[in-house]
Amino acid sequence: MASIIWERNGTCRMEFTLGDERKRVRLEGKPGKGAATEFKGHLENLITAYKNAVSPAPKTQAWIADLSEEMHGRIAKHGLLTPHQDQDQQEAATLGKLIDEITKLADVKPNTLITYAMSRRFLVEFFGEDKPLADIGPKEAEQFRASLKTEKKLAEATIAKRIKHGRQWFKRAIDWGLVSRNPFAGVKIGSMANSDREHFIDRATADKVMAACPNLEWKLIFALSRYGGLRCPSEHLALRREDVDFEHGRLWVRSSKTEGHEGGEGRHVPIFPELRDLLAERFKDTLAGSELAIAGHGDKVHGSLTSCNLRTQFQRILKAAGVKAWPRLFHNLRATRQTELCERFPVHVVCDWLGNSPTIAKSHYLQTTDAHFALALAPVRVVLQGENAAHQQVTNDAKTCQEENTPDENTTKTPENPQNQDTARIQRYSRRESNNPQNAMEKPQTALLSGENAAHFPADLAQVVAAWPTLPEATRAAIVALTK
Figure 1 (cartoon, one colour):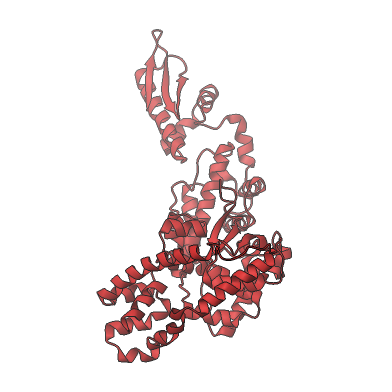
Figure 2 (cartoon, one colour):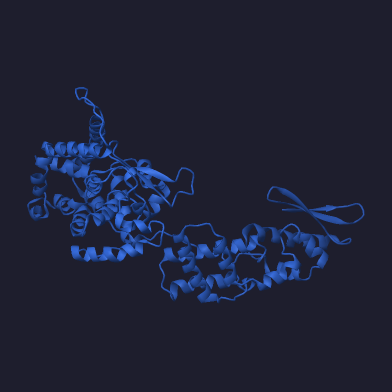
């Protein structure tokens, strides 16, 4: 990594590449070959430590301590050592001051500041508020991680978040010249996904919860999470009347989480059948404007309202519904919807609707459910017909949407205000649903496959019947077709 360049007069210099630049360090006096070779070895150790953001080897640290002021300055000029004039600043740098300064300068969302505060609390509890940064080494960082697991009993995903913050903050300290190495650089971060907290909320459970919701506002909060896949509470509370396009069947969802990314200020989400009637009822008496969908909390859209405020009331609703509260109440509603939609649509389409990436979806949202195991055990013809039905359903849905939005040539157009237009569309939708023969037949066919009749089926089909509430709609349609 470094080369020794000898001059005719017996002096020499070291040349090396750091980043994209070629660097030079001239040695003092006329060193012998052995001294130059030793210098080269320690210099290469410094370069390796710099690139990996770790401390140099103990022998190199002892060599640094014996360097003259002049030689120390020549190396420090290239960023491989901290200038001596900055040592007073290093000695004054403490853990608490570092984190507070970084937090003060951070341009992040309020929820991120909350996670910063949590990580700060754990670090300060272990090391101390006034712990000098220079006194925290790789060994101490490893001990901190071990304490989170053995003493605090934190989950691996939570530990990963705390270590990640520690590594980020010490990297900033290196950039500011407060330390020369990152003690967290070699500490295992681990996965921030926690499969133990995954939970799939099937439709039977969702129906119970919906029935227990005390008012339309709470029905919307639940449905927008479970069937719309919105982030709660930020995306729910930003939804306004002007964002609901009944004509084209789309919602414009403002996203504070992704607004910092190009094109991430919002996204379009289909007005799924499970949402249409609720949104129509919510806005049936309102003119087009900026009225909030979740009116009861509208004054806190940009205030301190978080999912914690909603969680308490939601837990009461679950108790009233006779449903045991699941982990990560609102996140798992969104994850359930993404898992469900990926059974019917390509993953890139679903990610566009829910506002995340396939990588994030795979790590934090998509779940393996009991229904997947049930399908694996079902007769092959049921699975194949379910796949065909899924493709046919998407085609039929697109055709129906096109027919609904095609103007009737025999109808004379007359100007209508937005309220009347929405009401007319809702009425047409309701008549179409009530006149659909398939809907009239669905209930008796579904009843045939209810849990109470499971004993009359062979063992493999009984497993499908038991998992019926969690099966995708297309698969259920295929199974129903077999009973005709």
